[in-house]
Length: 387
Image 1 (cartoon, rainbow, N blue to C red):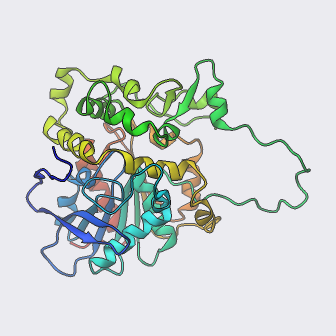
Image 2: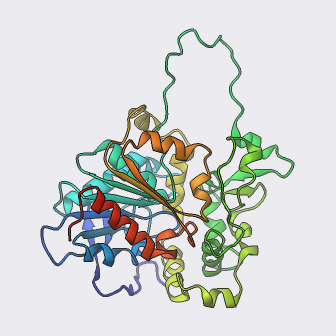
Image 3: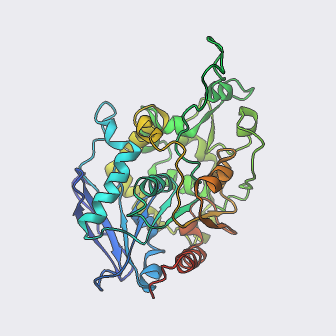
């Protein structure tokens, strides 16, 4: 498909697509439902990696039926949103977390909202949603995080005067520890931030569609070996217990990592939550736009760029009503030892915490009915049921 040609997007009736200038350099591709009635409270849905606004297709209509204007954009670097720089040697700073949160703020204000009833984020979107709320709780009045817990902003050293003698040895680097294991490993975040990550996935031997099929299957509840549990410590030996889609073999890329987990034709036919026609939209869109935008965000997370902005919030809590929903087969919940416990401290009003059976990482696609039920219960309990 030519790079400038957009395929027709097959959406459920009641969801429309349009483009919105977000006053931060982007023309954002947006899916929305519940737009027919003016004055509804808004919900902002932020997707993860490697996903798109399309990932919310099973969530939007039930939320709209409850009385909300539901807004789901392709985030910076993804899908049909334009105006971003994916050059590995280009404008990396635009992908720092603060600017992604600024994208969200600019979008909802461009659409005529001074606040949203809730921001709901999945995976990468969970991280962006957290900083939206941390920075502007007056705008993002509630927060729901799916799959990835938020452990708070980076901490600044506190009360350290005279505590450590000069020349004290630095703590061992976890990436060095992983590399030194008898079976050397590396964090997938570091791989996704590498220069070769885009080509590794985009031009993989099995083809992009099969890459997506294996990647989604590997991280879903359909892969029966996904049996996550809390880890004892943040050490290489404990992290090595996590499947290779997170803690990769040192000498392998992600395409090689997921290839052995390609489901059988029978398993593919039985996958009701992601049939071939829907999977094809992901492979066709990423085939058109590449993974370069996603790589830029991962580079910001693995490097120092933007960290000082996040440190400004060191010690600050999120005090709006919040909710966490993850799959009982999702290792993302426990990927970072201690993150769940830290989240419960940082999010002072997190009264809703749910692990959904029959769901892995793609929870709003694998178990949409249960996720929709939990989201609506959260909104209702926190005083925001609109119906």
